[in-house]
Image (cartoon, rainbow, N blue to C red; front, side):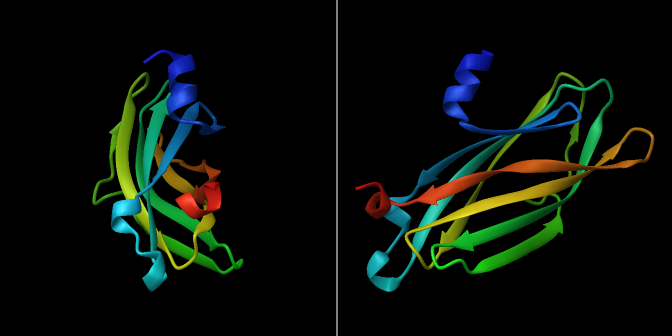
Length: 137
């Protein structure tokens, strides 16, 4: 996929020392139930290694903020049960989801990645909105 197409499909982007994290997000109306106070989003993450050495994604840290300003911090090993190694020039994609009790919110965070020399690198995940159909009207 050409860079311009990536920017359209993944409108949110952060770059940290040659590691590019791109995000696209979709409101999942069929998995949401506003009457029950449940809104759900899927987010697609693409991590590109534009550096010269492989990196391994070790941990993730998310800050999820709802429409009332309530913040939740989520931390854990890897992503979707994996700790992928991303070689130079390669990319790793995954899709996950986020429920909220409000019709909008935001997410942002960071990955801890191990470099080939054993050093650790904190890689930014860009800030992106979670907007439901109700907030888009």
